[in-house]
Length: 532
Image 1 (tube, rainbow, N blue to C red):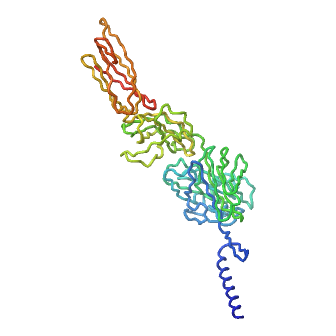
Image 2 (image 1 turned 120 degrees about the vertical axis):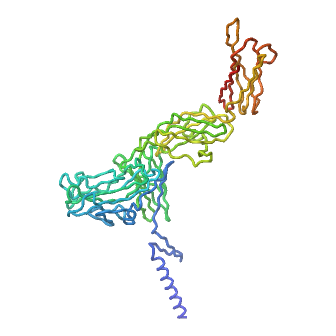
């Protein structure tokens, strides 16, 4: 019996040891309730996603922008160091920061000699802004030196600089600092497929009394918005979300919004520094690393397109062309961000609100060889000619096209002028006539399906006492439903008989027939025939 108890006790010890080894690899809480062991892992952190109504979710093009992987993805020249602890009373925004330049008063290198750089992929001009946190520090006290002590370049073009004399904060052990600042640089004016970002820091004028800079986080996350753009945050976690938060500065005041696990909001106006900060925290008190997104504002739409034209082949295929509109209010490149083509079978088009616009159908885009295309391509630069081949399905006799453009903030331009195109059912209905020797005019129409009625006017000249008299004869005929032709209508010039269109004049000349067709949507086509 004792051996049995001893073996049982030994087994329990082994099991407890195995359990301890299993749970030692993560931070957890272990509780015992009703003889059931429960383990809850708390080492995971919440994850927050940002979406923007009608706009692209900001995408990150910077490699290792928080320096969590050291200098991976970056090129460094001169005095460039990875710092993961508080230095000179400057604490990393996250776990790491980069110091560019030497942090002592000893002689050191010039500002051009200390460089941190990265090449950023920019195909299709998909990078709108580059933002970064920096904290500039300087020992320099003499005027005219270290001016600048910190410089930022995009493709060898200086976009920002800080002078030592601009730092007026009280010195600590002879060192003055700017504190952490965020700078957003609009780079939408650079059309290069690659952007080279360079940070320089160091001495200017001499090598004494160092100036240097800490770089916190670098990002291309940028949301281009207008006043009514709605931002949505949603947080997920293994535990319940305690709160999700968004913070920004407006007119010098810090605004913070909080909710349980999701949050939606818009900005009443342009926010200070163009920076939105957001994060989430779970019920254990674990918070994720704060995210920073640049918010760039543009409330002015592109100009309206005023020269839209449509040509057709009569089979539902149309070629549309117009001049690319101007949009100079946000980007240095005069170029809209996208197009939207719609059509209608009715005129006049109704007063179009945004809601009405969405009810209008879109034509299918075709390639130059007539095959289905991949959709609307990015707009050309302002002033260049846009050409699109489109196709519409249906049997309407006429189609009316309109276009509007939008910018990167999704501000829609005014609607363009209306361009009309015809299909085969309305493509110049064939008007056949015959004027006999006895002044008998007969005419018929082909390709008149979908037309409901016909109005005609016969005008002619005749001689009266050697004077030419101009006269006319009007009439209206209901077309026989959906047939392809109308055959026929007679007009007699001479002896009149019952139920005929009759003109009792001799010496008739210069006969002109004008036919007006109306289709089911009340669209009008005029066809004119002159007969000898």
